Amino acid sequence: MSDFDKYFDKLLKNLEDLMKNNWKNFLDAAEADGKAFLLETKGDLKRWTRLLSNGEITREEFELLVGSKEDLLKLKALKKLGLTKVRMQMFQTAVIGLIIDTAFDFFL
Amino acid sequence: MKWETRVITIAFAFLFYFGCNYIAPYNQHAYEQTTSLKVEALSLVAKASEPYSDHEKEIEQFKLRMLKAREYARGIPKNLEAAEQWAILTNPEGRSMFGFLGFWEKNKQVSEMFAEEYKKEIEKHFNAIIELEAGKISSGS
Image (cartoon, rainbow over all chains, first blue to last red; front, top):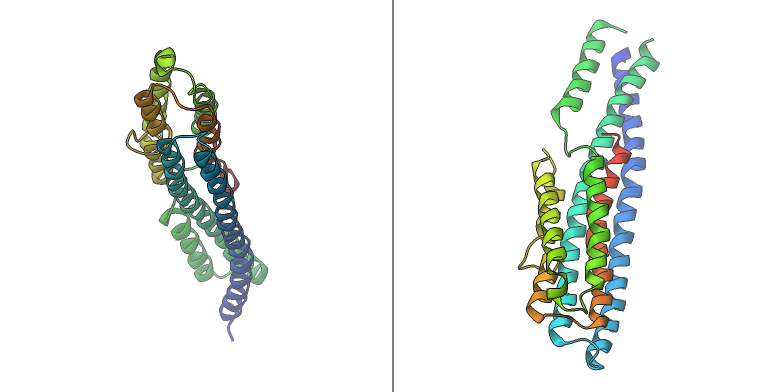
């Protein structure tokens, strides 16, 4: 096995570790965020239906409140998309560092 | 290091670095502008149980600042997500900030309880923009 092959094998191993560490926390956080949103929405809907039935808010006001959740969902989805791009950029920088550091470990 | 390896490593690095820049870097002005407008928006929503006509001038000035912020976000390259978020907030047909202002104008004033509940929602709407901008800091971009 040539030095370059050894370098490349080591690089792939390091890359695998980097991917696990880099994305797992991010995906776990996204899942937790989604669950928190659903729970929060459930609580809000419960409160709003009570306010509506007590006559403390009008039907139109209730509709606007519920509709605002749909807009919030879109805003959150856009945030998630943007943050995924940020994470990709960070990952890209980490890969470059890995390629260079592993090369230095092997060849210098 | 062999020269071939050096060339491959550098080429790989350049490809990654310059090949794909996914999103605009953190923008301090955009962040400050959004946090400032959030405070103004919350203050306005809290006043919605009062007649719209009493706050007309204040609302028009606020709307203008919101539109300026939308145009600023739209003008930043690779800032599609934030620009789209601003489009939602400023859509008069939507259910976010401008939609709310239209509702207030149409109904002259809204119930106190509704204003209180809507204030919590609009805070989350602005937070989605703020959190996206703040999230760019960690990338060091």
